[in-house]
Amino acid sequence: MLVLPGIGSFAVETKTAELDFVNRTLHSPANQILFTQNENAEDNKLMLFLSKESGLYESDIAIRFNHFMEQVISSLQSGMPFHIAGVGTLVKNDNGYSFDVGDIAINDLYPDIIAEKVIRQNAQHSIRVGEDQKTSAEMHEILHKEVKEERWWIAAVVLGVIGVAAILYHYLSRQ
Image 1 (tube, helix red, strand yellow):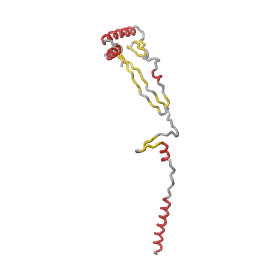
Image 2: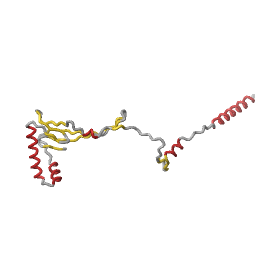
Image 3: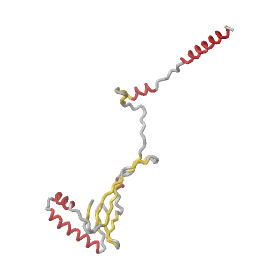
Image 4: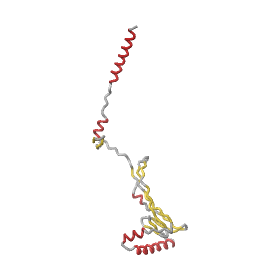
């Protein structure tokens, strides 16, 4: 967050990447700069940061920064817009201050991409099966073996018919 005393604060809001399954598109993350007008906002972290980066005393940085902000506010009040390179334009209007991103399109640097499933035929890779390591070709052989039709049930049916016939013969021959 960047606070400009006497004007307001700027913050960057990030929208996460999204996957659009229907259109097979991966939308990149998007950043949006939000401006909140607050003429009483103050932040001493900026002075500390500028002091560490420039090697100057924090009091000297505060004096220079306050002088810079006085120039910015006076130019805005005279009707001149204040252009922040790579960010946007700050202007003074009847309602206070407003911020316009304009034609700056940081998100155009990160275009959406097509997300399609890639299927590679006959690509061999290793697979962990239980405690064993097998290749995809070995697993393909194991899983796609021809299943022999088992005909054990035919013998069971024949024996069942013989058993029923023997029981019927036994009861019918007694009479």
